[in-house]
Length: 424
Ligand SMILES: *Cc1c(COP(=O)(O)O)cnc(C)c1O
Image (cartoon, rainbow, N blue to C red; front, side):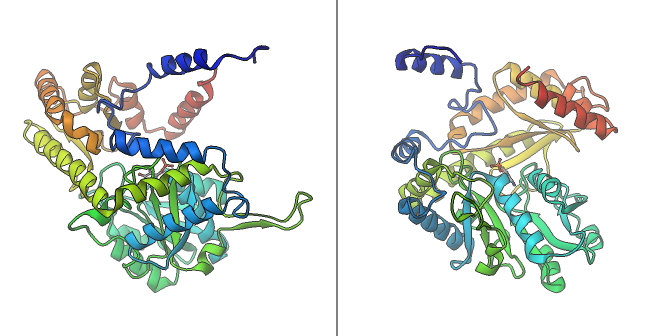
């Protein structure tokens, strides 16, 4: 740290300068990470964040405002997910919501050597939870439609299973797992069923038709639903909901013997930033149901146009049958990682996926304006690379190589080295 402080004007320009090196999400060039609903919604986020910037939801007594916002946000989400009397907590993101759901299942079920059965496409947060909380993850392969294979799923369930998991939709392919069949297992075995709707919880309810995925499906006991994704709220807001209070109680932490006073906390974090909670409340009130329907229709029509465009390119295909505005595409005749690289050279940041190699598009309302430009570039790139695929084993692209290297321990060490080296 420097001895002298820095002036606010100098800092402002340094901050702005630093941001110029980041991904250009405002122009629609980035196809992940940021869910852009336009300037007006951002203005609402900013206003609420500003007023509650320093507020701390750790104390519902000191900040009754945040307690009310959190309660009302959770009520809105519970209604959307088909169970107005569901209860939950706000968390700082989807991963924390998933962590809480797994910890809750562990403590509520209280069985020895607990296991959870989940699709291979489930979010890594479940494996993080497995590692943190000592619940063994039992992953199940996907079927040809990229939804989890139910025959293998049933075979993976045992007396040690405390939790079964499905996604609505999965992040990699945007398909909704067979939730009624997964939840039926939970009902039959008197265990818990979590539906990870981090991605779809604020999208599927606003569609004309969506596959069954929420609390209305018999056997579903908990759900995670992100607000900072298709809820278009400020980064740092998600929800985890339970079918009843008894289940949620197993989530809470209490420590009565702290010299600092009686202590309790609902989620992973201690201090809980007020800004994202207030911003979530404000954006949801600002948009209302009509606002979400409109925004998601815009995202959906952009996604449909992109899918049609991809399908019209010789050799390219969309993976599975994506339900909403998130999907992956690949090719049997063109190297898809090379496509991503060439698109990158043209300024598009398209995520590469593995098993199988594919390109991932997360489409938001702001992408509507760039659909034609994107498809023009994609067509040109596909033409340039015609006959280069399919993506080979041990492909030149580093990510490609990692995707196909059979030694996963080596790959894991490589990723950890990367993480470790970020500040070196
Ligand atoms: C994004 C996502 C998560 C994790 O959410 P974070 O906010 O990134 O922690 C979990 N599950 C699914 C399906 C997701 O799309």
